[in-house]
Amino acid sequence: MDELTSIYLDHCATTPVHPEVVEAMLPYFSAFYGNPSSIHSFGRKAKEALTAAREQVAQLIGADPSEIVFTSGGTEADNLAIRGISSASEKKGNHIITSSIEHHAVLNTCRYLEQRGFDVTCLPVDGHGLVDPDDVINALSDKTILISIMHANNEIGTIEPISDIASIAKEKGIIVHTDAVQTVGKIPVDVERLNVDLLSLSGHKIYGPKGVGALYITKGVDIVPMLYGGEQEGGLRNGTESIPAIVGLGKACEIALRELTFQMEYLKNLRDQLQKSIVEQIPDIYMNGSQEKRLPHIVNLSVESIEAESIVRDLDKKGIAISAGSACTSDSIEISHVIEALSIPKRRAGGSIRFSLGRDNTPEQMTSAVQILGDVVQKLRGMAELERSLGTRRCL
Ligand code: PLP
Image 1 (cartoon, rainbow, N blue to C red):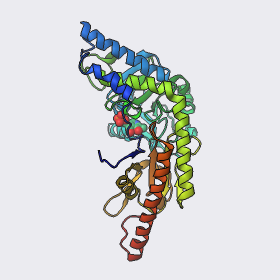
Image 2: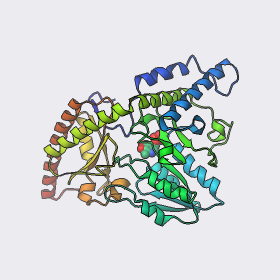
Image 3: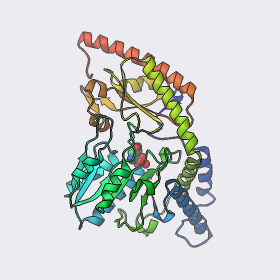
Image 4: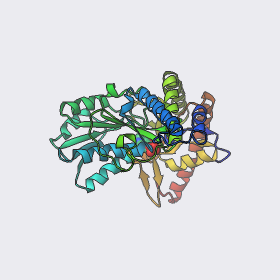
C-alpha cells in the first residue's frame, strides 16, 4: 500500500477485516482444517463452524439458518438468485423486472439472460435515484417471474422502497430478489419485514473477508444451482466450503449486529459533519441521491466542471482514498450508469465523487479531508479555467 494513504473513505468498495474476524478465522487455516463433509472429528469440527456461521448470518437478517446459502460473494449470490430463479421458472414465464441503477452483478446477469430469450424491463429512477413502485405495477405482465431491485445503491446510497415493491409482487405470486450488499450490517435488514424471497449479501463490505457472501432463499422457493458437484449447501452451491472465510463472514455479522445502532449513529454524525463542511467551504457543490432515504455512511456529490477522476487522483496523492462516478477517456467523459440515470447535467455528472465512511474514521479525518478537497478543487478549477482559455481542455 502507498505509505501516504492515511484517510480511507472508500468503504463501499471494501472494508478492512475486523481484528476479531481475523482472530476467529485463523484457527480454521491450520488447526481446524477439516472438510465439513467428512464424518471424522476433523470434519465435525469444520461442520460445527459452518453451522455456527450460518446461524450468525441468519440472525443478522432475521432468517432461519436453513435459508442461508454461502457463496463466493455478492456477485455470485446475485447470479445464483437471478439465473437460478429464471431457470427454475422458465415454464411460468420469461419476464424479469430490474432497475437501471443495479450493480453490474445484477445488470450483466440480466443482459446475459436477455441474450438467451428472456425479456428484461429496466425501470428508470427519479432524480433522487428512487424507483417508483407504480412503475413496477405498470411493468408487470403475466410472464413476469422475478423482480430484482437493490435495497440500497452502492454509489449514491439511496434506499429503495423494497417492501412496497415486494407487496405488489406478492399479490401476483412473483418472486422478489434484493441485492442488499450495501445495507446488510449497515442498517437494520429483516427479510420478513422487507418481504423478499431472496437477498444477497457480501463479507468484504462488512469488515469480513473478501471472496465470501451469502444468498438468503426463503423456504419453499424453487431455484436451480449454477454449479454441480458434491451436494454442499443443500445442493445449491456445490463445492467444498471455504470454512475460514465463512467463519469470518459469520463473525463479521455477529459484530455488525452487536454494534449496529451505535455504528449507524456514529457514521451518520460523521457523514453530516463531512457534508456540511464541504457545502460551507467549497462553492458549486451539488449532492446526488435522495437526502432522506439514504444510507448513513455515504456522501455522493458533484463538483461542477471538474472531472471526478482528477479529483480522486489528486486526493490520492495527498493520502485520501475516495471513488469517482465517472472516468475521462481519450476525449470524452464516461459517466457511471448510476449517475447517468439521475439525469443531471453533464458538467455536474462528470464531477461526481463518493465518500463512503467506516467505523475507523474520525471527526478529525473529516476536517482534514474537507480542507484537502478544498485545495484540490481550487487547483483543478484554476487549471480547467486555463485550459479552457487556451482551448486545450479535453473532457468537461
Ligand atoms: N452488489 C452491490 C450493490 C455491490 O456494491 C457489490 C460490490 O461492490 C456487489 C454486488 C458485488 O459483491 P462482491 O464484491 O462480494 O462480489
